Structure formats: structure tokens, C-alpha cells
Length: 226
Image (cartoon, rainbow, N blue to C red):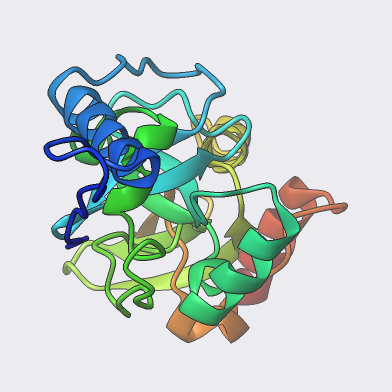
């Protein structure tokens, strides 16, 4: 933000109230940047994250904000929740990003209103296509590994919108396979892992919600052993 400061004609050396407000806002921004308010996992507060040379307001996804290395967030307009902010945010691409994987090293601290002047919205610039964060969807992959090093996919579950749910389902399927992973399919060892959801191959996934995932596993195994 570049702005010329005008001096009041009747009081040489004095600043107009409008210019003083701009200076106060700038000073508050400098103080916020130099002294960020600490963020800790599972705090359930909006945070300030670095997006290139800008700082943006991000809303952590409930239940997925306790990671020490990566959390899930959505970028929001700095003036949220005002109605005008939603429209402006839509025009600048804030609403199109969805949930994103945010490394905790990109978090400056908890959000402070003074950061608003450092956002893309303040500059009236759209968010870039690449904000440095991958989509925060997750999947569970069940794979069969042959002794010769080749492998193939038995089952893909997803998308999951919370990491802990994907981890829970992967653990449940590993428990189901306990002691049988190397024998359930002759000549192969079956593994289950939670991983990133491959949005480019979404047709290969089965919706894991409102279904019995152990039955899905049993059906997948039966399909290759029948």
C-alpha cells in the first residue's frame, strides 16, 4: 500500500485524522509482524499463513488442526464474516481453493486484524493458482505386493476430509488383516496405508462413508482369489 500523506493547511506539520489513522494502521501491522501471537495445535482459532510475499487469513478445519507438521486449512478473506467480504473473496478466488494442506512452518501465528493490509485482498489481487499448499483430501489404499517387487491396488477408499478418520479406517483394516496379510492372497502381501487422495484418479475410489469398510475389503480380496 503506497499513499501520500497530506498536511492540514491550517496547522503546518500536523497530520490529518485520516492520515494519522493510516499511520496507526501501518504501525499496528509492523507490531503484529514483529510480535506474532503464538499458535499451538488444536487451538481452534484462525491463523496467519505465508502465501509467497503475502500473509493470508486461514481457517483450520475442525478436528484436523492438531498436527505438528501439517494441518488442514481454508484461506478466507481477511474481513470474514462480513457479507461484502464473501463477495470480494469469491471474486479473488478465496472461495475456490477448498481445504488445503498447510505446513506448520508456514504459520506466522494466530490471525490479527493488523495483517489484513498484507493480504491479496488488500491489494485487490486474486490468489495465485499455486498457493504452495496441496488439497487436503485423504485416502486409504489397500495394495497387494508380490515377491518380485510388483504390486497392484485392491481397494481405494476416499476422499476423507479429516486425517484422523483416514488413519482410523486404515488401522481398522490392518487389524482386520492381522496375522493374514501375507496369506490372504496367495503369493502376495497385503498392506493398508492412509495417504493423499489422488484427485486425478478419483473414479478409482470408493466412498468410505456410511458403509462397512471391512466388507469392502473382503469383497476386494474375494474378487482376486475367486
